[in-house]
Image 1 (cartoon, rainbow, N blue to C red):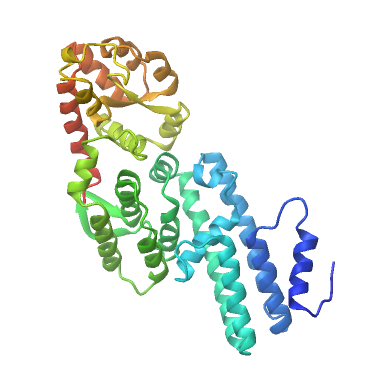
Image 2: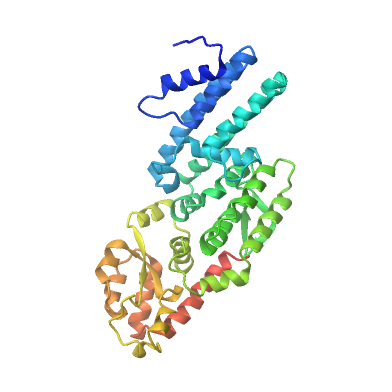
Length: 400
């Protein structure tokens, strides 16, 4: 339907009123109508086709992104509250330095203000240049995000990170920006540890594990402003240096160690850490299919000495209830266990649990069962020794 309306405000209101029925318009759809309006009214329709083509592809890419997230169980993106506005907001963080915590309505207001200034100053060439740059960059952002998620469908490393770890939403703008620059899966120069080579994707994983999950902080301003400033003129060494310094500032090694040797039960990265620890002691990298099979079992964090002890604390080496409370959530008292088995073992003592642990898919839990069955004991000393053993591997993997 075509409506001819001289008033800019009325034209936009008519579009929104006619279309905003049943399912509300997203801010992305409103942004498209705004850009088309300015192209139509002030640029002699010069960019109408470009805008329509770009947004047509963007909405198709969004559908593909949501489909991959649904198929692979990428929780952040498959959430019913996640829509194209979220990606529009992530893109804005990497496109502008106006607001590192921008909402989708803010992005729309930013576009309105920007285009209105071009119109008021009769800078139509600059308006054309801005619209062209914005839609191309937005399209590239969506393409790059889809490209990253397509690796989840075929690469065990990407599957582990996006499905088991679940990167913080704050990191998405920088992760996608690195992909847009063709650097995300490039090897980091002069950074070989334990005979292994690291990519920039590995550094983003390291930062998520240490800063966002283990410390539990969310330094959005630093990450967002760097995502905006990053461009093709940055060398690989410069990017590596910034990422490592960011990690060191927010999670120095001493703080990481103290966090990992205390209460880790609420650490959001713990399932991911245990998956990597299973690979380490099993001596192999699990395939995507292996990990997918693990995840269908709804793994839980199991307390070996239960949180509601039915045993004598003193016989297990604890001085009192406070001593046990200070230890019960340490790495050494935790393992990875299928939900159905966790429900079965409940408050049994560790020796009784071994019959269930033996049936677990998770290598760390089966090995734990063998150790308990062999020693016939699991106590405070066992927790302390096991904490040191597990931390040694975790420290080697997330090392800086």
